[in-house]
Amino acid sequence: MAETDRKLTQRLEQVIMTLLERRAATASICPSDAAREAYEGDGDGWRALMEPARRAAWHLVAAGKVEVTQAGRPVTETEARGPIRIRRAH
Figure 1 (cartoon, helix red, strand yellow):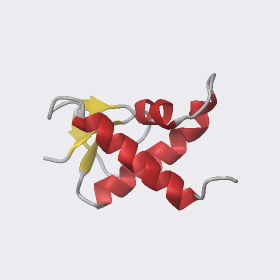
Figure 2 (cartoon, rainbow, N blue to C red):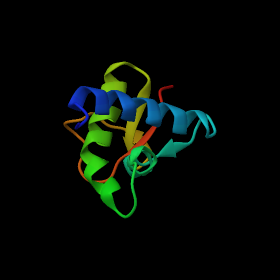
Figure 3 (tube, rainbow, N blue to C red):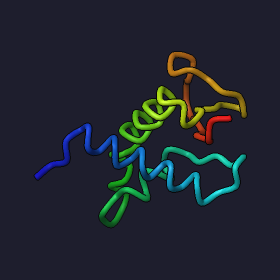
Figure 4 (tube, rainbow, N blue to C red):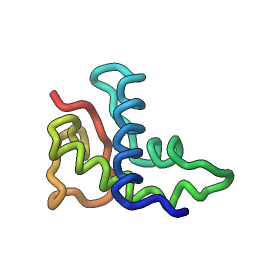
């Protein structure tokens, strides 16, 4: 049975928070780190989780738990273009 979008988002949110907890307080991760960690298979199937990982990051931003950055500065979802990083909210 396919995982529902909400359950997938929740799982990716947990993966993002777990990855950040394993790193220094000022460290950031790429959404691909979360996608790779959450993927349960071989090969590059994790790539299908990239957009869901980005979506999970934005949910965590809305909850005040993380910041999404580009070039080291926080950005909003409407500002973000291209690669992003995720770090704990300050």
